[in-house]
Structure formats: structure tokens, C-alpha cells
Figure: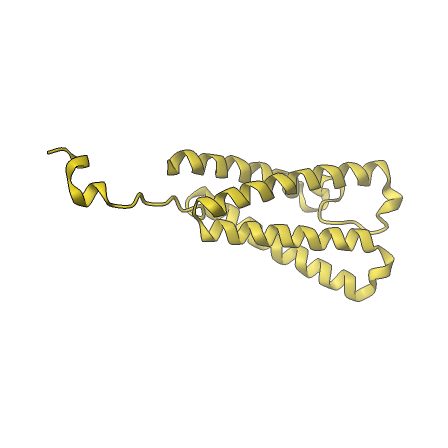
Length: 146
């Protein structure tokens, strides 16, 4: 009798791959820190004068939401969360590239910087490295889970 013929093996659910384990734990930590950093920055900036740079502050709030959602998805795990996090990482990368280029081409549009300004230079370029690393991990997680 082979393993697939045994009823307890054939009917057993496949173990799901945990996104927040191994290198994924480092991603959870970075995304968690960036969620708190971007949200805190946004709250302080908006409290001090939203009218001074509404576009920059709104973009920082969007970054905080994206970081928070990716953190949640990595912790939650599962295929649905993996796909959602992958889409958010791609959107984050597009946002970093667009905002980064925009701040270089038209600095007057941003009287105050955002998390993604100058491709995240104020944050050691982690905002541009993080989504790439996240997408690599999430794509790898799919191959391991299957």
C-alpha cells in the first residue's frame, strides 16, 4: 500500500506555507516598522498643518495604509493573503517609482517630502527595496506552497 492509498494521508489537507516565517519574518518586521513610521509621520504632519502640503501628507497616509495591509497579509498567511500582498507590493513599487520621479522632476509640487520622495532616500532607499524583496518572497512562497 502506497502513501496515497492510505485514507489518513489522502484526505489530509496540505500544510499551508506561512508567509511570516523565515525571511518573511524580516519582511513583517520591516513592514511593521514602516507602517508605524509612515502613520506617525502622517499624523504629526497633518496635525501641524495639512494645508501646507496636502498632496505629500496624503501620499504618506496612503503609504502607511499599504504598509499596514501588507504587514497584515504577511502575518495572516494563506494563498489569498499572498496574492493580495503581491498586488499591494506591486502597487507600492509603482507608487515609489512614480512619486520618486515626480519629486525629482517637479519638486515644487512637494513643499514637504513624503515617505516615497526621491525614491525613499530619506529612509535609506528602503521604500524602493522593500516591495521588490516582498514580491520575490511572495513569488517564492507560491512555489513552496504548491
